[in-house]
Image (cartoon, rainbow, N blue to C red; front, side, top):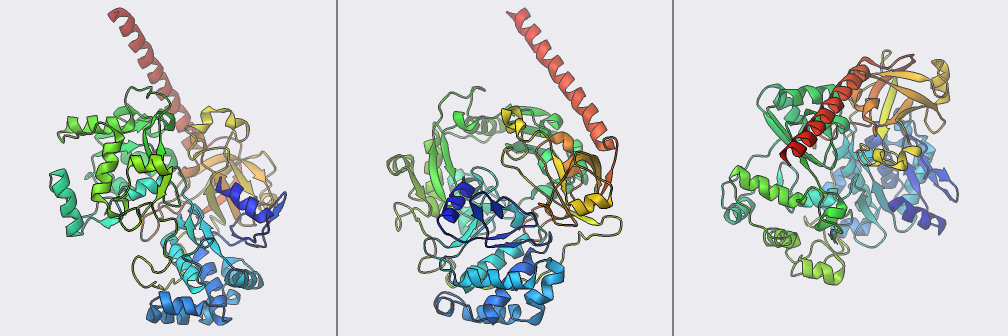
Length: 542
């Protein structure tokens, strides 16, 4: 949806800079063409953002008035001195990034002088060992050019799935309560303890990779997985499975029996968007009502399952309707204090913060000041990822998604969308294919330090030499068998975008794929036997 609107603006005359290791459709397709494509090597995002900043600083393209009025000048001066160093110049970084210095200079000039400049980014920024550093670098660049606090500018993260924003807003992080307040904050914790009537820990919980590690050492015993398929979507599949197999209780709640459900002790049915009452929040902080058009086929909505589970575990929850849950959110979360269903029904939607100061929401953030006060520039030193090419693994694999399949494909693989994308393939540049004797549709083995899998090859100039690409929509492809356990230094977000691999022509599937096929056949047979047995018992009981 966002890309369609972006293309509309491009056809109307807007200009575009694409930073991507692949030649994606936004670079060039019917009726649109990017002004600049910075085709960087995977893992060098921070080097590229520093090079762009270097040009803006050394060529006098800064929005100095904005910086003086809105930012911490002392921190800015430290940052300016850092990015102006010769080692951050496009010329110094060209060999490392693979992007011609002249192209970086031209792109930097366009962003700094082209009027309203907006930065939009997705998982290609965050799924790196320096993902958080890159986000900081983007914020630095936007502040340095004054591209914050008015329409048509800003730093705009595009979420990978529907309502990820809403989930984060509601405290799905292990270290935060709703409204992005840290669990160690005594005032916030006291507020929730008083309302919920229990004592809460001030130490953060575990992130997903930490859960797996704790499971392997025996200190993490159980998992409740709702609406996520970690066996297929998380990196280093074999490590994930090993961790799950050590646990004593795994509960999966989902629409379908996905890959993770095959390791579950208990499966609870989930509800689709057609069966939900509640709200979704999108990337622009817009809260919208969701109204069910049919009763949940499982008998209970997701929120009712949560209430029933909580009551069964000994903590009573007394909600009669999702609107009462929103009332609790508003009562305990300052940025949502003015949100209620009546207002959402009247206005259609609101953008948080919504409170006494902004009773109908906040369409634009940071107009006159930042939430933290003065904007703070931070140093973004480029540190190469540990995942480096070697003679054994001379190529870099980067992974992603395709338009016709949604995330791990648990829903879209069950539709006619498979006509557009029926299998995960490996995209490889003609030069790399020729060196390995690989042709279109050949079966190729992809190996990394984490594991091996086999896919069919697609030989394409959309790739740059030395870089290969695949998707992860089909479980039998084993795409995440070969991704590693590297992760971001701050968030532990996996480094899906950089894996050193070797690619060779093969004639048969990998050992992991053979084991998966047998395991999957067994699971489906057991499920069928269970269904038949249940039907027989029902008939006899009747």
